[in-house]
Length: 186
Length: 147
Image (tube, rainbow over all chains, first blue to last red; front, side, top):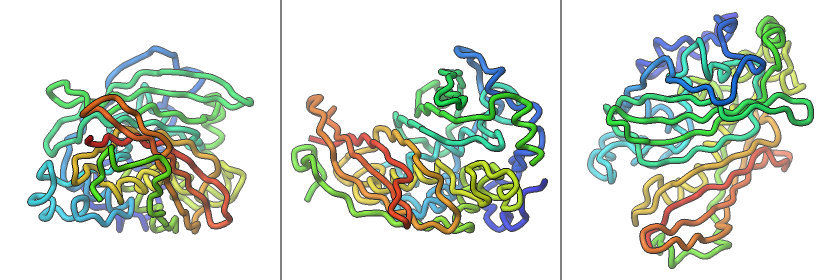
């Protein structure tokens, strides 16, 4: 089940060109609710190099119009960092890119997942050229009103090990791999 | 007025943000965030899977979270002219945003946290509603303010 081709018109960044966009391919390797273990921790599959185009496209997709967020030349002259300012929810892009398609935290790609609650803490702005490592820790796993919830804590650190942001990411997931299969094959 | 801790009181209201969730906007958000879940982008799959009980695509929760946060950053800045900055965004989602919806988000300063010079911040309550007036999400946004 390929991703609709109409989305190609929005491809703006190098990462978007190479990112595995079809979440239905390889779902068998995603971590599932019934297999996740609280306390398990590890790095994401990929590191994320911060680029101007990544920030620019996220800001545009959010509908921002502040030139400090969408005009690179203006930002070079006027921004307090000399760079585009990133939307505070930009860590979403880093997480989806970094977690990859196999292993801990990949339940973020689950077809049929529902989003109940998210919390993002900003420590300091990301800067162009930083290489961000995402560390995933399975933080909580519970059922509420019959629904399976999973939460992970994502720490985003640069190459100097400085903490840039944290994301407590929660989703309501299909309960078992068989449930994921049903949705993936719907 | 400078956006300083001493100038801002509980009850301060932000200019509402109105955001369209047409499929092209959802598609752009999917690419920008790399959240390519088919419930957002694949109409045929969404019609069969009915993840939210409806046969349509829906906007990303993270797109709603972005709209909620935008209420604050569009008025005060990600990093403000006076030195303020976003501290955290804590969002809950109460109803899926169906494709084609228009979302309106509004924010109000709820309380002031007096942590001392250089450490003060305010908590802003933001809520977003769809075109039927139903609550689709709410957030608490922490914002550091210079004294």
